[in-house]
Length: 423
Image (cartoon, rainbow, N blue to C red; front, side, top):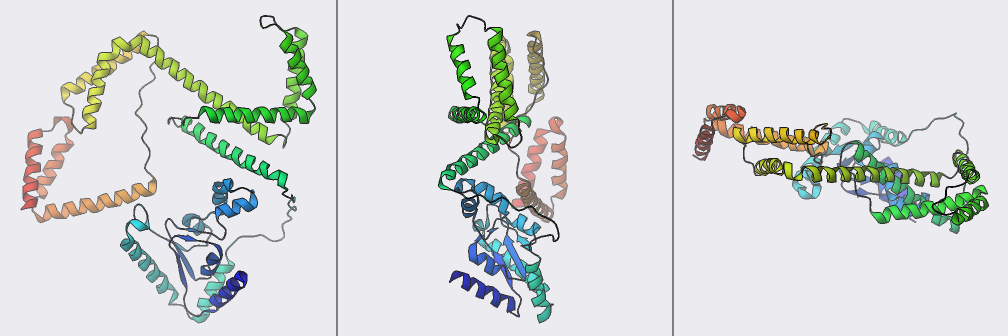
């Protein structure tokens, strides 16, 4: 019944002789998504999503597990920006900071403006043009090529025993994505995310199990067990015999050759790569902690006074206070002394870096910039209305002088401007 209802709705909407404009204000999905798609214009709020199948449903169908929902959402391209690129949506309606619910009145005005603009364009068309425009929009959705040979996709029946494999694959892909993010953070000099011991141990256990299965699949399990038995008999203080070393190297080489074949043991390869990168992260962390400990032991007493000067300066700046010339000279001298102390301990000083603060999203930065412009314009209007433009410019010029500015003059000008605005 639902399929028939959707079909009847599509046929009726395609035949309507008036302009149709659809607006997705939140989450548009399932059969309703098909219904509102039969429009001359489809508009979406900035943070709205639009799909026929939800990411969870798509993941359950394709990967047999809802844990792959993030990957399904990325492939479906359900955001307003992506759908405009695909020409399914025709426009994006901006939302206020925090989303449409933070300012419904402003959002409603933006929807009204977008609707009026769309209707102004569509009202210029006669009935035939309007119907043709609607049909063309629907026909243009999707891209395909004719006449190109495509090999048939191999069909696989998903049996009950294979369900666990899908879950493992989804978990593995999630772990690899987390590791890629960690490596990227390290390369950009950002603090690396902490990998819990439980996560690392779990990956090691799973890699050991897959390694054992790989040896069995390659027919090398008997050789491996024989070598383990001989190694257990050898004394820890006794050097391995050349013959035993040769057998170990031969087995390792045979295993590497089988593992390197294209399309073989992909899961094991990914886990081994994951462990390799985790080990590198742990090595970097250990080196950093060792170096920090050495520096603290050697320089703790010598640099204590100098570090206190830098801490006090940082504390004053955090409170919004300005540093006088004497304090700036003390900071410069303290940095110089600390550099000399490090060099005296044979530690190479590469330079100093500031703490990396989280970057502001470009969209948010642009909106903040627009708000600042409006605020400065309003301030300018108030200053001009009170006849204080001269004093305002004088105050800006004095502040731009930096450390050499006359603080008393700045305080006096601010006071005069406040009194002028209040009156």
